[in-house]
Image (tube, rainbow, N blue to C red; front, side, top):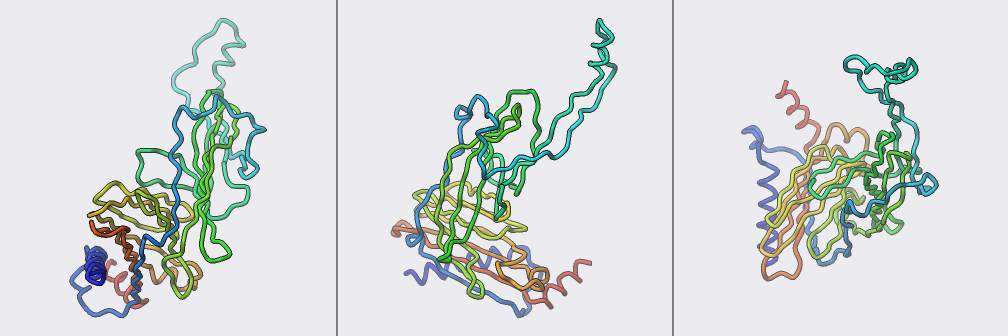
Length: 306
């Protein structure tokens, strides 16, 4: 029964990766393909913290409360455009002041010790969040406290990994960052390339979270909810799960960890991940497939597009 299910899932990924191919793709190709089956029940459990509510925001953030792990540095100024003539005032001094544009200070917010980081503005509604290793925000006289989320990924000494999730508050008036709740989530390596792990995972009651290198393209869907992805120095995607349901991810990576520099440009990697659970199963099954065309195939494909 398990073998039949794995075969069915494998066929589903094969069809997803082959979608959009031309007739020339029917010809035999020399390529590298790897398939790994993962029992989700064997993954460690963890929980991505919920996004802070607006009511959780502090009234203000004094500069001395800024965490030592975060650095705020000047990154320039933003001068607003002038429209129309300045409003005339009673005194000459006030007329001069009215002509003076308000300048907003720009700051760069980044980890004090950079690693594999993803800084972004969290949202309950967004399903595809583009993150950066550093975020630029403007300071001013307005009283506004905005949420920021900082995720940092690190491989542990035993070959597994951890994902640190820290919530931060940026005060535009004091131009400072204040600390919020934080959590550390353990992940297990589930896929390897040449003996080097590149895909990590953990689970909870509602879904499976996967962490992989930064992708150039990604698409995902699920029968039981909306997948949520974050793309920074790495890619995190959380897939919802439910019995008698399935979900799939199709992505393209430029390289895998430790891969030779020559392969990173010439041999992009296509990744297909299928998550499925039948009514009779206690835990879902993950099927991970990677496909990498050889240099000759990539070159001929590029020539056909010219």
